[in-house]
Amino acid sequence: MKHFVWLEIMLAVFVSTGAFSKDKKPPELEEAVLAIEEIQNLTETGVSYYDYVRALPKVTLAVKRYAKSSYKEADLEIRMERIVGHYKAAGNVWEICNRFAKNYGLLPCWQGGYTEEMCHTITSLYPKMYTDEPRQIDRDKALPFIWKEASKEIEVLQEMIK
Image 1 (cartoon, rainbow, N blue to C red):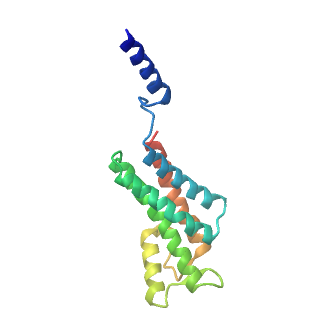
Image 2: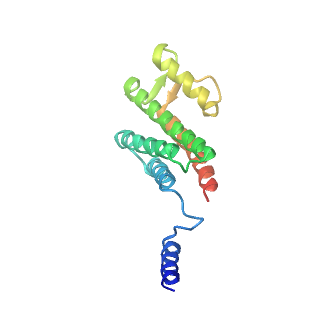
């Protein structure tokens, strides 16, 4: 009789804490999603370059932790990697514009070398960003465009984990 009482108590504890809950998500998944939502919130409310480059490693690390966890699902991992890729691309654009286009945030694409390579990479990753052959990348247009692409991926991710 004591064993049944003990079993009932343990069962009640597990059920009340959500240990058997189907909706309970692994902590690595929750951490990754939270980090993604935090950087998304930063980009939607206004963020400085300094705060952005500090937030980027946090989201990258959280997604890597999820990818190494025993709970990972390939579809979710791929989606998260795409999201991180968008945020890294935006960070690269911001950094390169700060270095080479300090005055107006316009990165010339015709000078050759690193800036031309960066322009080619960005326009090949985001072909809808420009309607004609770009002669420069405008930081103030490129960042919101890339962040919007990340937001689209986040919407899909959120539907996947419901």
